[in-house]
Image 1 (cartoon, rainbow, N blue to C red):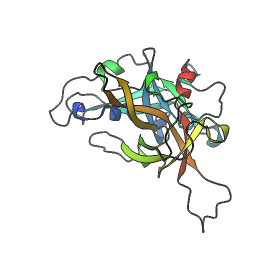
Image 2: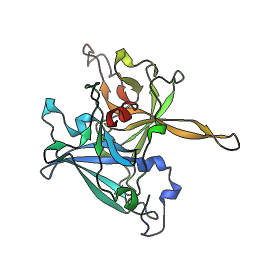
Image 3: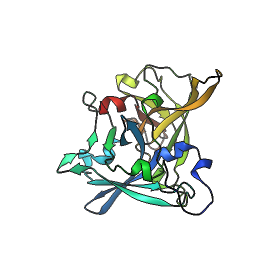
Image 4: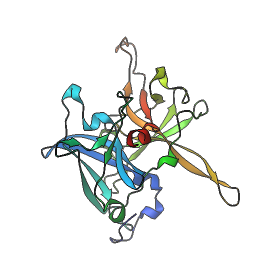
Length: 256
């Protein structure tokens, strides 16, 4: 949904709505900026969540403990340059405001509750839903090309507040969780700031009344971090350029 106003120009109607599902995250503690990251919106039973990597909201290993997230969202249906800042508290009365997986404690994914009731009505936000998720028991062809939207090193179209789109290849068998963990691998050159990015592919959707199947975006996973090997010689060997992405099917399991 979008509020109207602002000057004519490039409008969200001329934009793939996928751009409006992704947001740049800035983490804060007591008003001080800590890090940048990426997140995307997910709607479940009419409740809105901001999905990102767990290490964005808390990382005990490096004592990263922000108290709120800030996301910059479009506020006009007629002007992509108009925006509002949304502050998302991570704690209310000391209680964490995010969901994480109960049985898969290693999963680097959280869904942060967005409790502001005006976000969907007043801002240009679209969200993934349960039907958009490709289950980890479904197969993808060998060498499947995917897209990963985010904010590498915080870089993006600052005028129109839009993320960067990176191309990737699914580098492990999607139907077989890598080494038995709830993630798969992507082959892509990614950077810090992309943590929490959605990994998506386009597939034929449900057939319409005429039997025609329009292409639809499917959510595969949540990009977490780059992957390296402990015995790599930094002089002789380049980095693998492989990354971990946690299955998106974890998201409804967390929230349920």
